[in-house]
Length: 76
Image (cartoon, rainbow, N blue to C red; front, side, top):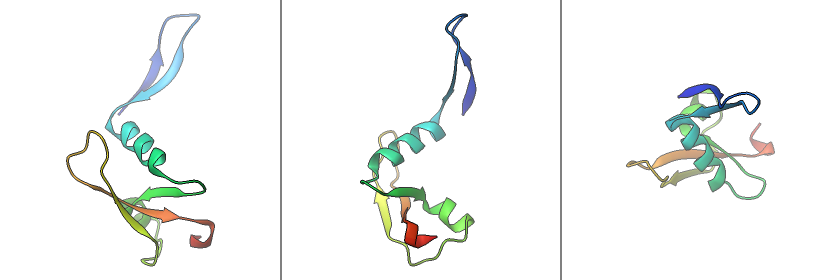
């Protein structure tokens, strides 16, 4: 991942680029209305229960499926 300033004054913007950013954007785009999708790895690290809905996404640019869980207000 890369994060930094892009452009020249007076049009300088902060941006981030890379696989992590692309994966996050594509995961967010796959969420339905009112849903938050979190990687299965992040859910495990956060100690979220095993009873959450799981999905396997085919994301552009990824050769392997990306496992996520659906986090809802009831999940917290």
